[in-house]
Structures are given as C-alpha cells and as structure tokens.
Image (cartoon, rainbow, N blue to C red; front, side):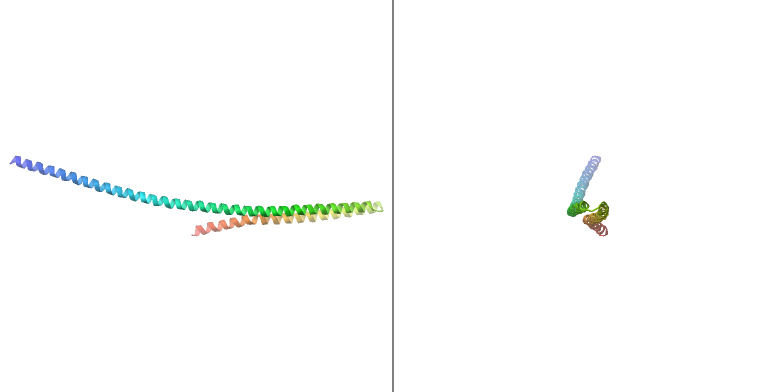
Length: 174
C-alpha cells in the first residue's frame, strides 16, 4: 500500500504542481493583460496631453503672429505719419527760406535806395529786428509741427500697446 499511497501522493503532488503552474501562468497572463491595458491607457493619455499641448502651442504661435502683424501695421502707420509730417516740415522750411530771402532782398533794395546813411542804418536795424522776429516765429511754427508730428506718429504705436495690454489682461482674467 505504500506504493499505492506513494503513487497517489506523487500523483497528487504532481497535480498540485501542475495546478500551481497553471494558476501562476494564469496570473502572469492576467498581469500581462493588465500591464498592456495600463500601457495602452498611458499611451492614449500621453497622446491626448500631446495633442492638447500642440493645440495650445499652435494657439500661442498664432497669437504671437497676430500681435506681430498688428505691431507691423502700427509701425507702418506711424512711419506714414512721420513721412507726411517730414514733408510738411520740409515744405514749411522752403517757404521760410523763400520768405527770408524775399525780405532780405527787399531790405537791401531799400538800403540801396536810401537817401542818407542814417536812413540806411534805420532800414538795416528794422530789417534785422524784423528778421529776428520772423526767425523766432518760424522756429516756433516748425517746433509746433515737429511736436505734433511726434505725438501723431507715436499714437498708432501707443494704441497698439494699449490694445495688447487689454488683450493680456482679458486673458489673465478669463
């Protein structure tokens, strides 16, 4: 009976080992499936995060491009204003030179036609005073145009920065 018992015991032990091996293989297979499932979930989550990051990055790049385009437009407008005002100042300077030349030749004509040295001195003194007053007025006029030009040419750029600030604060508040 010992042989039978030992055979039965050996058979039971072998059966237990086989059952344990099958159970271990089943656990391993289940674990592999869980790992594969978890790996797939991680991949999908990573893809979602990557897609969201790419969309956000594209949005940021689009916003930067839009802002740069607006800045370019503001600077171009500012340049046009400066160019127009530069022409205005140049034309005013030409008019001033013409006026000064006309007044100078007119005074010279009076000096040449003067009857006395005293009259020549009076005409020269009056012409000098008139020339200084005229030059002060002309410089003042040009300075006003230049100041206005500066203000007008900076205005488009200032508006751009104000709009940019408003956009940034609205994004911050949103």
